[in-house]
Image (cartoon, rainbow, N blue to C red; front, top):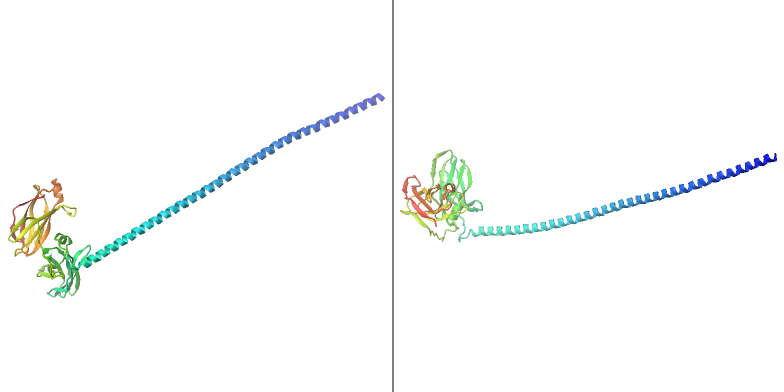
Length: 378
């Protein structure tokens, strides 16, 4: 019995120790597991910290980039503002230059206006300038009265004579100018005006400025012309007035000088034709112009035209017709057709051959026909 009890006690003791051993093992396992978990947790925390640090770095980088962009944009805006300011300065400088140019243009215009005013003022002078006329009734017949009012000059129109035409007749009439001269030189004029019955009209008789210059006229001492008047609906009723003469304020003491130098081409019974030069400038629009001085000291009003013109032996088209009334002179242009010269491969005019026909201005009867005249061009 005692042996059995001892055995039981021994078994119980062994069981108790075994139970303690197992508990101790389990407790150690938990402790070991806790260390691993702690280690893992620490590692995780470290990784999290690193991730947070990386996130912070990323955020910092992004912030830095954003700040850099802002700085770059600000700098760019500042640069643009500087450029705009420079452009504004340039524009201001340009405006200043333009203002200076405008000021200079205004000064030039003022100078030109002063010169024009001075020129117009000087034209009233007798020394090489245009003068004026007194108001004069130049025609008063057939219930038609015509008054010369003033002598005027416009920059683009040229010299003009202002007329007042009063038609007191019972018919509509047309009044035209013809056979005009200034200082003894034939100068073509232009005027054609219709005036209804019982009405009046102011009209300008305009003189060809180019011919005035070619004739060397600087002072207007006298003007002569006639008028052609007809019923507006019937040309056959027309008639020419007598020659009308107006003397200007520059007439008294004016020196009528007709000394012309050149090569005489024709001289017969008081009618002379003199070559005074060949104009081949760009101003000669239709072709080279042979300038001719014509002096009519005959008792006839004549019309002169060119015939059979040749250049360097080739027949060339030409244009020339000039009326010169008795006692007058003319400086006229014989035009040599440029197209005709080109067709004949003529680049330089060396010789001109031409003849002239002289006809009565009134009935167009032939008064004379010259032989061929040869002119050498130097």
